[in-house]
Amino acid sequence: MKPENFPEDIRPYIIPQHRGKLIYRCLGCKLEYGIKELLYTCPDCGQVLLINDLNFDRLKKIPGRMWQRIFDYRKMLTIPALKGIYLYHEFIGPVIPLDAVIYLGEGHTPVIEANAFLQKKAGVRFYFKNDGQNPSASFKDRGMASALSYLNFLIRQQHVSDVLAICASTGDTSAAAALYASFLQPRVKSAVLLPHKKVTPQQLSQPLGSGAAVFEIPGVFDDCMKVVEALSDSYNVALLNSKNAWRILGQESYSYEIAQAFEYDMQNLVVVVPIGNAGNITAVMSGFLKFYEAGIIQTLPKILGVQSEHANPVYRYYLEPDAKKRKFVPVTVKSSVAQAAMIGNPVSMPRVIHLTNIYNRISGVQKVFFAEVPEQAIMDWALLANRNGHIACTHGGESLAGLVAARAQGIIGESDIAVIDSTAHALKFSGFQEMYFEKSFPAEYNISPNPDYINAPVLIHPKDLERVPAPGKPLKEDEFKKFVKRVSEEIARELNLTKVEKA
Ligand SMILES: *Cc1c(COP(=O)(O)O)cnc(C)c1O
Ligand SMILES: [Zn+2]
Image (cartoon, rainbow, N blue to C red; front, side, top):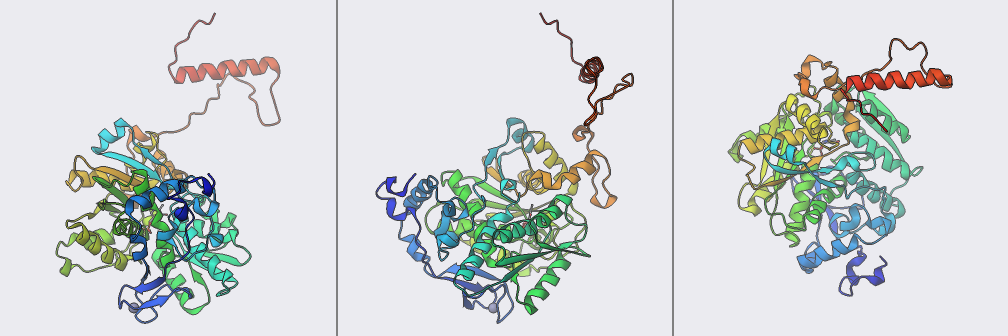
C-alpha cells in the first residue's frame, strides 16, 4: 500500500524518522560512548556494552495502542528497508537512515502451532517460531542485518572505509556474516574463523559460497573466540560476534515479532530459547523490556533459557538460588548435537545477569528461568517434532526438551502457551539425524537411538531384472515395461498394499 493511502492518524508515523541518540553503555563501569566509532568492549574497563537510546522517552509520548497500529499498518508497506527487522526501526536502530539499511529477506518468520498429538505428548500448548526460514537459515541474520546496516551507515558517513568484517563461529554466525558482507563487497570483505570439524558441512559451505576467507582452527568455539578477540584488539577489523552490541539490537526483532504475532497480548506466554554465547537470550529480554517500557505490551512474557548438559554454564550459574552467592564459572564443553550452542564461556553472560535482574524486578516475580537437558532428549524431541510437520533443528529440539522439563518441574503452568525458537533450519544439522538413523553416534554424545524414530531408505532393485535404466542409457520399450512392473510390485509388497481391480 502507498503511504498516502494509510489512515490519516497513521500517516505521520508510517515512515520512521531517523532520530534518537544511541550510545554504548558499559555494563561494568556504566561509562557511555558515542557510536561514531565501532566499539565492542569498554575502552576503560574492558566489560561488554549494550546500546541505549538516550531519547527513548520520546517513544513513550506515543501511546502503546498507537504503536501497535503503526507496526500493524507498516506490514502493508512495500518499502524493502521496512520489510525486515527495521519494521521496528524506532526500537532497533533509529539513527540508521533507511537508505543505509541492508534487507536480504530476514525476519517475520512463521509461528506454527504444533499439532494436537505433539502438544499432548509435550504436556503443554506450544508453537515453533521457525527462525531457520531466514536467508542464511538461522536467526543470526537478524543481528547481521543490524550490524551490516550500521557498518554501511558508517561507510556512507565516511567514518570507515575498506572494512574487514571478522567473526568466530559455531557455524551460523559465519554463514550470516559472510552473506550480509558479500552484499556490500568490495567495500566490506569478510573473514570467518571456525573450530575445525565442529561445524556441519552445510554450515562450512555457506561462507565459502559467499566468498569469505574461511579459516579452520583447532579446538572449540571458545578458542576461536579468543583468537578473534586478539585480532580485533590489535588490527583494524570489524568484529561481528554478538559481543558487537549492534547484533543484539537486530535480534530484538524476534521479541517484537512475537508481540505482534500474539496481538500484543503476552498473558500466559512463555518464550523458549536455546543458549550458547547468550546473545540471543539477551536480545529477547531486551526487546520485551523495551516494548513493555513503551506501553506496547502490558506484561512481560516468561523467558525460558535452555542448555545441554554438555554445555551448561548459564544453567549452572542460576542453580544457586541466593543471588549474592552466585559465581560464574566457565565450563569445558563436551560434544553436543546442539552444536551451535556448544559454548562454555558465553560472552554475553554479564548482559544476561544484568537483564535477568531487571526483568524479574519489573515483573515483581521470577519470570526468567533456565533448564538443562540431556543430549538424548534434544535429539528425540527434534526428531519427534519433525515427524509431526516441523523443520526443527537440534536447537529447536533442545528448546522443546527444555519446555517439557520445565513443565514437569512446574515452572511452566497448565495454562501457559509457549513459543519455541527453532533457531536454524533442520537441514543444517541433518548429519546428526544421519548418525541417529545409522546408529553411528560416537560414545561421547551419550545418545542411543530409539528404534521408533529410525528411518532409512530402501533400495528397490529386483534380482530378476537383467537391465535397469541409467542416466543417458534408457531401456528398450519391453524392458522398460518389465522394469516398471517389477519395481512397483516390490514397493507394493514392502508397503503391504492391496491390489484393486481397475475398470
Ligand atoms: C548461535 C546459535 C545459538 C545460540 O545463540 P546465542 O546467541 O549464541 O546464545 C543457538 N542455535 C543456533 C542454531 C545458533 O546458530
Ligand atoms: Zn567500563
